[in-house]
Amino acid sequence: MNNIFKEIYKVIKKYDKIVIARHIGADPDALGSTLGLKEVILNTFPKKQVYVVGVPASKHKYIGELDKFTDDMYDNSLLIVLDTPDLKRVDGVDVTKFNFKIKLDHHPFIEKFADIELIDDKASSASQLVVELVKNTKLKLNKDAAAKLFIGIVGDTNRFLYYYTTYKTFDLVSYLIKETNLDFTNLYENIYLRSLHDLRFQSYIINNLTLTEDGFGYIKLEQDILDEYGVDAATASNMSNNLTYIEDMYAWAVFVYDKANDNIRGSIRSRGPIINEIASRYNGGGHIYASGVRVSNFDIVDSLIEELNSACAQYKNKNDIN
Ligand SMILES: [Mn+2]
Image 1 (cartoon, rainbow, N blue to C red):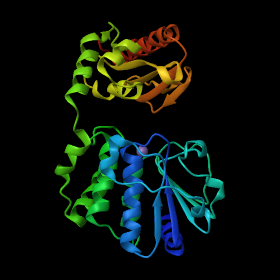
Image 2 (image 1 turned 90 degrees about the vertical axis):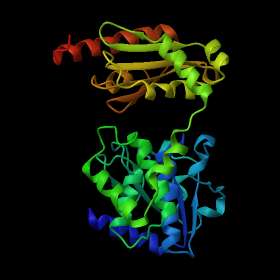
Image 3 (image 1 turned 90 degrees about the horizontal axis):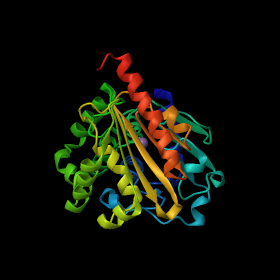
Image 4 (image 1 turned 60 degrees about the vertical axis):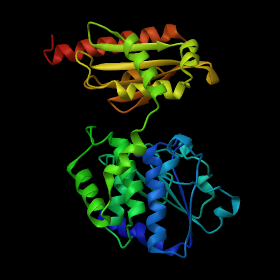
C-alpha cells in the first residue's frame, strides 16, 4: 500500500497542471476530499496550477470555491478523480481526454478508468484516503486543508457513527488535528446548522410516519406537502438520515414525488436488515444500510414497502426480537 502512495506522489510532483474531479451530486466528502487535496498540493508545490471542478452545491459552499473548467485544462495535465467508482458518475470533465489519470476511491470497485487506482473500500471516506496519502508522502498539510478533510470524514461517517468508521479513521483524524492544531469543534456549526423551516418539515415526517409491527417505518410525500413546506425532492428524501435509532424501527424509507423527473425517489436506511439487494430490484442500489431507488409510481412503492417490511420481519426473527 505504501508504494502506491509514493507512486501517486511522484506523478503529482511531475505535473505542473492538475485537475481534480469527483462524482455528480456533490456531498461533503466529495467536496472536502477534492478541495482538501488541492490545498495540500498547493501548500507543497506553490507554483503548480491546481483546479477543482464539477457542479457546485450551494448548501456546501462553506467548504470552498470550485474552479470553472475550460478546455485548455485538458492539455498536458494530470486528472485526479476522488470518491467516484465509475466513469459515468465523474462530474464536469471528459476523463478520456487527459494525459494521465489517478483514481482514489472508497466505494466498492465498479470499473477501472485510471492509470493508477487506489481503491480501499474499508476506508470511511475519500477524505480519509487523502489524509492517508499525505501522511505517507512528502505532501504538506495546513490548517485549511485539514478543516476540509475533517469535514469530508465527518460527512461520510455521520460524526463517526457508521460502521465503516475504524481505528484507522480515528488514527488519521488524530493526525490531522495534531499536525495542524485544528479547532475542529468550531467546524460543526457549518455542517449541522439547519433552518427552523427544515426542522418543521422534519416534524411533519415524524408526525406522519407509519411504523409497521414488523419494524419498518415509511412515509410517502406528495407534491402538495413539498409545496406547503417549500422543500425540494432531494431535501425531502435526505430526511431519512435523521430517523435513525428509533425504538422498534429497524429499517425505514422516505418516498418523495419528484416533479422534475415525474417519478418517485426513495431513500432507504437500516440499522440491521440488508436493504441494497432489495433496492437493486427497484431501479436503485447502494450500501447495505443506505440505499436509494427511483420508481415510476406509488403502486410500485407499495410492493417495495412489502419487501422491506418482510426483510425487517426476517431480521427480527433471526435475532430473536419480539
Ligand atoms: Mn465518499
